[in-house]
Structure formats: C-alpha cells, structure tokens
Amino acid sequence: MPGKLRIRSIDEADFRGKKVLLRVDINSPVDKKSRHIVNDNRIRKSIHTIRDITDQGAKLVIISHQGDTTDYGSLIGLGEHAQKLSEILGKKVEFIEDVAGPAAVERIEGLRDGEILLLDNLRYFTEEVSTFEDCVKQKPEEMGGVYFVRRLAPLMDCYVNDAFSAAHRNAPSMVAFQELLPSYGGRLLIEELHALEAIYSSPARPCVFMLGGSRAGDAFGMIHRVLSKEAADTILTSGLVGQIFMLADGIKIGEPSEAVIRERGYIKYVDEAAGYLSSYRDRIRYPIDVAYERRGVREETSMESFPLEHTIFDVGKHTVDTYKGILSEAKTLFVNGPPGVYEEAISAAGTEKLWKAVEEAEGFTVAGGGDTVTSLTKFCDITKLNYVSTAGGALIRYLSGVKLPLIEAMEKACERKY
Image 1: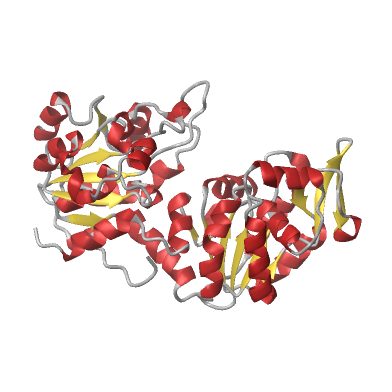
Image 2: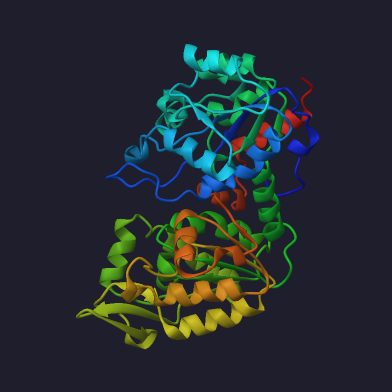
C-alpha cells in the first residue's frame, strides 16, 4: 500500500502500568538435525520495540510463530527464542509452554510492571497455520471467536504489531486484535514501511532494482508495477529471472537451463517478460555472459556460444562489470535475489562481486528476502546497507501493490475510537 502511512506508532502511546500484547516475527532458521536456531537476525530486530515498551514500565506479553505445516522441520517451541531475547536484552524474558490456557492466563494476570513474558508458538493453533488460511476465509471481525484471541484480548490494554515480515498473512494474531484493542505499529514495522516508501514513492534518481535468485515468481510479481509506475529507472536481472528474459528475447540458453525453468513452473513468465521487453526494453538488462561448470571447472561464455550443453549457475565477468557500473551511479538501490548459486564456491563469484558492489554503492540501498540476506551476509558487511528488510513474501507483495492484511488492519485501527 504505497502512500502516506496511516498507522499509530508506539510514540503515540502511554504504556505505563499497562498490559501490552506485542506480536513480533522471530521465526528463525532452524537446523533440521539439532532443532536449534542457526540465525537470530529476526530476534535481534525485535529488541528495539521490546526495550522501548518495557522501559515505560509496561507488563509485556509477546506472541510469535515458528515454522509452519509447510515448514514442519522448523515447527518448534519458543523456549530457545526466550533465552536469546534475554541474552540480547540483558533482561529476563520469561517463557511459558502455553499460549492461552489456564497457565498462561494466570501468569499474565500476575505480571508486574516491566516484566516480559513470551508465550509459546502460535502455529500450534490451527487458525495460525498457512493451510488454514488457504482453506478457511475469515474476515478480521470474524476472528474474535478464535480461542486464543477471546482468551487473550480481555487481559490486555493494547496491542502492538512489529511483524512486517508476516504482514501478508490474514491470521488472527496479525489482524484480529486490532478489532478489539487500541493498536500501534512497533519500531521495526514503521522502519520497514518507511524504507520501502523511500524506494517506491519518492526515490532519488536514478533508481535501480536488481532482481535475481531462483524464485522468479517474486520478481515477476513486482516488475509490472515497478515499471508502469516508474519506480525503477533500470532493472538488472540475473539468476533464473535473467534467464527468463533471455528466453523471452529469443536467446536459446540451452536445454539443461530451460529444463530447470520448466520444472519450477516458470516457463509461463517468458511471454510476460517478452511483453516487458517490448514496452520497456531500455529499462531492462539481462546477462550478456554466463558461467557454468564443465568437468569440475568454472567456465564462462557469451551469448555467441549459446545454446549451452550445461546448466547456467552464475553471471559472467562482463555482466558483473556492466552491472557494477550501473550500481555505482544509482542514487536509490533495491536488491532481491542472489545473482547466482552462491552456496558453492565454484558458482559464487558473480554473487560475491555484485554484492560487494552493492555494499560499496553510495546510493540509498535496501535489500530484502531470505536468500538475499543470507548471501549478503556471507559476502559483505550488511551494516553498510541503509536498510535490510526482515521480510520476504510481504516485501514482494507490498512492492507489487498488493494490499497487505496487516496494513489494512492497522489503518482501520488508526481510524477507530476504542
């Protein structure tokens, strides 16, 4: 929902002595064997809001999710999350293996000013899993009857949401409490929205979007709006996104690479890409050379040698040089998706060099998406970027112009008198 924000921030609230329900997204990558957290980035991102609320003397109750039915290996309790929050805050975050049962209710009622309680995984409730959302279409005003909503809401004085990365979810924890309680946006939520506004509504020019990775659907979800609304002056494509544009321009990239695109269901985007090239050719770039593996050795080739008998796994050095020149002149830069298969050393050169160029870029730089952040962290100092979003799906939908359930709920709450 690009435009002026109509969300109350926590700066507008007085939390002294009040019970505050805070929805964060501390859903973290989990090692499938040890079942322990391997990256605490989202946990750290939640600290600012937690600290600001408790510094006012609020009685803080935190709710979050971890894993899903579609990510069952990560569906674990939040005990380790509480430990990490305590370590980072330097203050005890109590954890209870309950969300809305008698034990949780009793502990919430007994909270004292400044105390923090983390409830257990919301995804243990059917209404919070993605499959429920997909099958049962509920409106926020209908979710007041959900068990944990009707149990928790009467105990609370107000609700804060700081979970932009789950903003695309029409789940009770994200959109129901705004119907019942005075509601505010946390630090991270407001920061995320302002950062995205900076690259969408009023970017300094030239504005460059660099879109790559293996999730082509994410890129094609936003390209039309980004081009038609002139948010981006140039789009640099790589990864499967770049290969789709190459196919769309009549370049025969080779059966192995085409097979990957077909198997992932992305061949449908070729015609769409052709339409963009027809209307916006001067604003779209795709790779002019690529890299592949032959007999265990990295090799690079230009389009003159196509089609290839090997699978493309990276951009070539001429593409890197061309893109680096464009990135160095950008005044605003948004990146989503690594340019190549960054996990292996043989195929990581393009990603490493372009991420270094992003790190060194002087323009206002925003990066988002899980693989994007992971690969950036591997090759550069992400603290040098202006903003690194915690979001993936929500970020893509926002930049695609899709109205996000959380934003709708927060805007309605802003207009409501409780």
